[in-house]
Amino acid sequence: MTTAKSSYPVPVAELLPQARQMVQDLGQTPSRNQLMAEMRIGAPKAREILSRLAEETHGKTANSAHLHVVTEPTPTTDEPTETYDAEPTTTESESTEVEPVAEPERVSAEQPEPERKDPSEPITPVADPAKPTDEQPVKPVAVWPVMLLALPAFVAIWSGWVGLGQLTGFGIVHPLPGIADGFAINTAITLPIGVETYAAYALRVWLSGQVPSRARRFAKYSALGSLALGALGQIAFHLMKAAGMTSAPWLITAAVACLPVAVLGMGAGLAHLIKDTDNHREVQQ
Image 1 (spheres, one colour):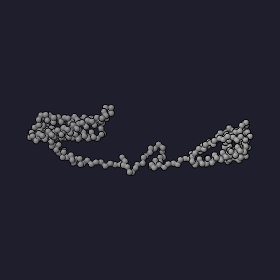
Image 2 (cartoon, helix red, strand yellow; image 1 turned 90 degrees about the vertical axis):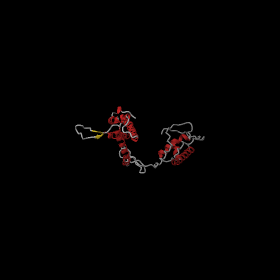
Image 3 (cartoon, one colour; image 1 turned 180 degrees about the vertical axis):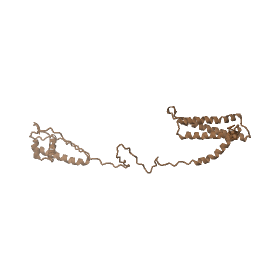
Image 4 (spheres, one colour; image 1 turned 30 degrees about the horizontal axis):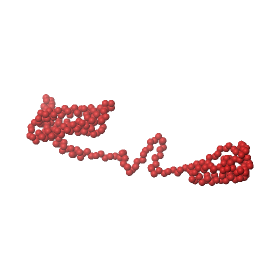
């Protein structure tokens, strides 16, 4: 250990680091005589250093339970009667900070994560039995009550369109002359089959949400238009029937005669739009 002589008494605060080093080297607190011999100091100063070391030891014990940091004691003035020359050393001051005690792990009230064997495996959430999940099967709504309710409406609409067709010139025709002269058909049935069937199908396409947006939009307006034409046809037939008319006015006859052609065009257009899957031509609604 290298020491340097000094012409002035060294304060106790400057001798404490060397005393702490001695405590670490010896594994216990040195005696007064050891301090006097090692540091070349007198008995009063050696007793002062032992008192300081005892205070630090007691402070460390108390701070280990309360997690406080031990501060270095305030240096005091040296005794004027000291006559020994101290040989201060340049040793590093040991840290007096006490490591904090690890805080106890908090127990979470939430459900723990499932243990994963593979870190890349995704976490599967634990389902709460009290909450319904989307994977639970949903019972479909029965459709037969709607069919039962629609049956009377179908009979009334059928009879109305057939009657309107007879008033506007629709009737018995032979579609296969020279081939099957005995085969005849009443063309009045084409009105309810064409107009009302297209309206029901276009309504289904519109509400399904499974077709391109252009087809959906076309089905929407054409279904509403077909239903409106059907309602007007029923109104016209019942008004003429109540008035005792045997033939319809020419305006109504012209409009009814165009219905099969209009139904053919709307059906063909809707079919092409449903099959059209070209995304760059599709206009978002």
